[in-house]
Amino acid sequence: EAEDQELATFCGRETTDTEQAPGQQVILSPGPYMGLTFRSDFSNEERFTGFDAHYTAVDVDECLEKSDEELACDHYCHNYIVECSDNLYTQRSGVVTSADFPSPYPKSSDCLYRIELEDGFFITLSFEDSFDVEDHPEVTCPYDYIKIKAGQREFGPFCGEKSPGRIETQTNSVQILFHSDNSGENRGWKLSYTAIGNPCPLVQPPINGKIEPSQAKYTFKDQVVISCNTGYKVLKDNLESDSFQIECLKDGTWSNKIPICK
Image (tube, rainbow, N blue to C red):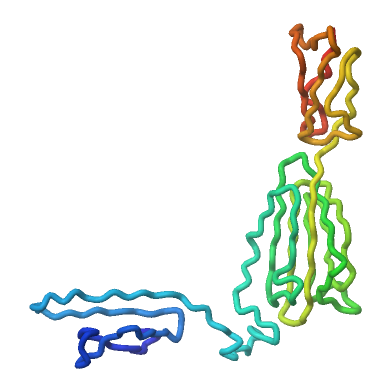
């Protein structure tokens, strides 16, 4: 039964043709609900074993159904519900695109993309030149648009065919909101993001010592090892050792001072 309709009634055995058994028959409900009722009387002298049925959900193809009164379907049929508000990126680099890029993006959607990195990293966004979001010649982005929230700063809205290019957010947390209305056939956008750590001051090796690795710039999570020339030992807090390691912290300072070689 489905939506007050009786779809089928079955009984008997598959090995006989005197009753109506389902066999391999597929029963499709007209909607998302279906009910099954099993009735038995007071007797079961032949020990009937009952039945076993399997069910599965089938996606409705709105394009074939032609149910496009509310612009549910058009020339570019996506044939799925756009779920795009749980996009979380936690790697230090990656790629983010509008749905179906470079094909036209779905209509009537609000997509949220979040990039969340460890405190101490700064995220940079780089949009590709192939940028195509519905716009208006006289009003700023009234239809479809991208808005970016980076900490206390906001960028956008962006639309049209001019790429936003490179955006240095100066934060470790970025939210990208992409809104589309119910019209247009635009192809969307693609960006790559990278992250660099908060820089630490340059460090100088101690007298009769050296620092490895030697770099022109040190950023968050970089580590250096201080060691001494032959005949000398690293001395830190009155303790001697062969080497001493320090790390660049998220606030742009080193975890410890440079020891001496003695």
